Length: 374
Ligand SMILES: *Cc1c(COP(=O)(O)O)cnc(C)c1O
Image (cartoon, rainbow, N blue to C red; front, top):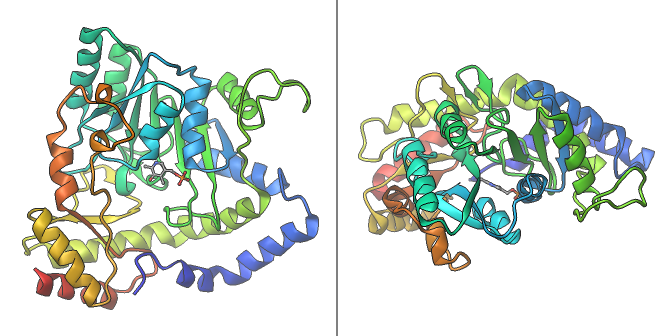
């Protein structure tokens, strides 16, 4: 059994993907080919933003936004404690400090109250300048955009939506990648919209920010290729990946989002009366189900169940076993408020196999094994 069956997806999409890739090979426009622009225009329109700037991967996308915002040493950027390492890493990479705030136990997503407390604590201490907020659409579920946007407005801070896992999700009629000031996504193969290598994109409504991002992506270029106005990066989505993504976007729009939601609802239905806690999707939220993550009693039970599932040939993952605030890479200045929910979740969570090509029988194999292992 596959945790996320990318081979099956390729079998289904093979004729279109092979055709698209060979078209790029014949054109020899490997960088900046027409497919890149076509993808950017299509995705911007789909998520509801004015601009999309494709780049090398989701981590670069995060860093490029913070560079465009002028994040520098002495700045504090507020980051959820329960997320993938990148969201905090890019802050430290620019010499600023990621300050971690807690998440909600039911949605795994940013807790606006904890964020408020963290901002107040940093202001009270007076050592760092509050500079920006990051929210993360964890496991495919959109952030509570209204709540986070309200905190951002109250403090005059820009909000960055990390939708690396959220692409395809929806919140009160708005699509992921359209929340806050600027959003990013990742096209890493296992994400809801994945390519066949690394890739990422940034979404913004601001014309100036778009121009600045396009410069930062290509060595800070100015009016011509050999004018460099600022220090940037080399971060581009290559044409082959864009061609693959255009085919995969058709699949995502027409049936993958629907089908992955059906798989999640089978899990919900079968696991409803067991001792595991199933993920919550609040009313008016729509998840793209990057992961289906359940909660077990404690670390001991979780680790034991995971090992027993492995013996039965069923792959599971722990996203994430450690709160960001206890990663060695970050200093004590990152830890201004307690994050007890993240500590609890990192001991309890277990992500089950899930993808749009999974049938009900496979879901039943997973749930029966899970119940035996409990
Ligand atoms: C995957 C991921 C990233 C990084 O994306 P890459 O394309 O792998 O660099 C950033 N944030 C979150 C929440 C992610 O899941």
